[in-house]
Length: 181
Image 1: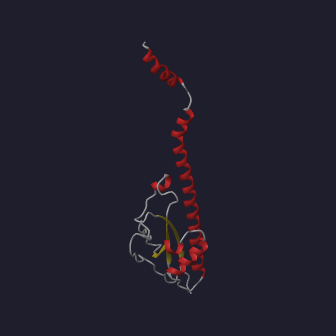
Image 2: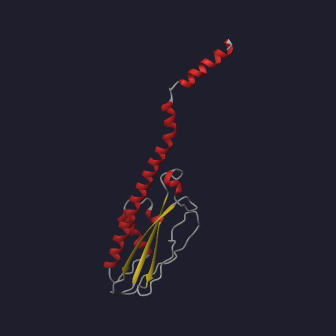
Image 3: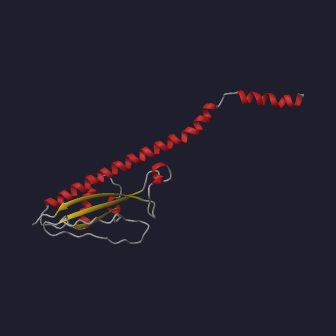
């Protein structure tokens, strides 16, 4: 070998045999996975917490409706009760929509698969169904709450289905019998 080739090849051989920086390579490969896992965990925790609070708020509001015999609360009154009982849902009154329908227990027909949710990207979206029942009628109350994911571009937040405004919906359902007055 010539002296010139020796000058180039010796450092290259030394570089090839060196193990310095191997931890950096492993870190660069594994770190994005752990960050995504962390973000997904936080997102799932927030979704679970919000959903359980929505369920709690709906259950307590339905209990109030059941016990308040002879009253026919409006959409906004029930929505305010749910938001008060849920407590931690951000912008609850602006992001919650209710749908109440009569259910015939003897001739059950499944409600529509898609819940009536608010889409902030649309100008106006009137209520689809909100009917106060008569005495002894079975009622189904479905609450749809929309929220913005904490990490909308990574992990679980990225894979959630979103509306035109980038919000995701969660739905809670409850049924009760309208007590006679």
